[in-house]
Image (cartoon, rainbow over all chains, first blue to last red; front, side):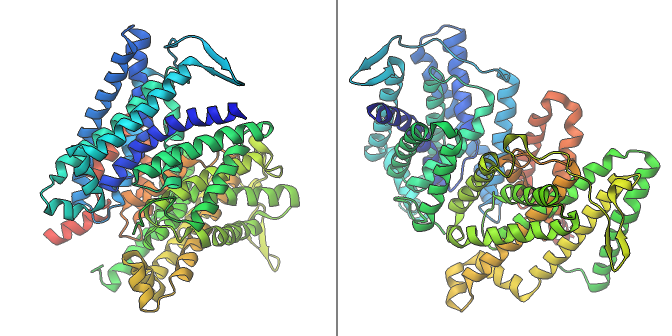
Length: 288
Length: 326
């Protein structure tokens, strides 16, 4: 039982970090970033190349993942999404763009890094084994780092000038503009931060699960699930959604071990029932 | 549309002549019989995309059409294989089954809007795949294989459609079947959109509360639109199962669902015939780029991004732009 909870917390921490990036982009731009999973994979491969191949320190590799993805995110916002949002009649059109960028990243990743499953050496060796819980130390490090990143993100959004501007933007774009917030600039920063979070999680998790070019899509779907559980566009919701999904997976995989994929079927079914009762998730804003 | 009546009729006649006479003639003279399969796929995919377009018309982003296509394929395959039904009977049954299922699913989830609806339907596609893997009747990951070709269809002793297995060229038969259904489907869509119900649907797209406040039964309308949409998905999935003579849980996946949606976007959400054009362009574009080998996906997605930047309102908005300028 303790083991199940520990696994759930570990999964939840990393999931919440993935969902945070997605929900940030959604809150600021009303864009559902289909390419989020691909960004995660890209971050994973960058860390793999720098830390696994070139032998640079893990921190440097993780930093490089975050910075690269932040730049990519900023460029995407400036040159792709901003243009399309301005020109299109219907804001759903950004979904086509997001899906196309997801395909594009898939292609780039496949060309650059191949289709093989890649892993890196462990960052910390050894296994924690006490009080009925077995957990490798590197997982604990990653879990703690993920929680630290989440805390830093929340504090940044709450107390920094940029964070305040972005929260204003998420609440009411027009009002924020009237108050003198530079909407374009903070949209770009927000998109960059969302992409950066995806890259950082990718870099963190490559040390445990490894990475391959095909997992982008499934990661995106999981991120969508978490955002739906918590409510789209709300930071607290994304964190809650991440931990809830992590727990459900951990419990489900233990209880329904013999049935394999049935766990996800149960989770999906439960989610649909939940959403029909609470259409905006746990704490989401109503969306028209 | 500013086209007058005679021009419209001429356009329809020209279109029918092209798909039923010119294309088969061109293919048989050039000997490229593989094109039949491509065009059949385009026709079937555009039927499913038309369904997605209809849900766009009521202001919902539908990424769940793959689920209904899969469901339709399995319903048809199981009825043919386990119960010995004729394919022609299973075709409407598959469609109706999907429509009924979509009413049950749609009643709760159509209350959702925007990204919530989009994400739930995306999850629905995954649910369908996992169900197909888990249920005993669908034969799990092995799928249902060697489904017989459609048999003869006769009414009052008069054979309307011959047995596909006895035909020399079953590809042509499938092509004609798919194209006929596509024409019927888009005729229905055109009629629907230009009817009273179509106008009401448009009011849903613009503002549901406002529509509701002047007495439009929004809950009923959106379920009807979703059911029609799923009917199209089921029919197209059933024919796909018959053509490939097999169906697997992976026959229609999230990628297919996303593609159905992309077809609509590319053609243009404001135009009934958008999904048809979008499917044609996307499918043929993908096929043509096959020669570029490993750069296929890169070029394809790159072009899609460029197209989106230049024509964010779909290909058919091009015609409108030139008309405005000229």
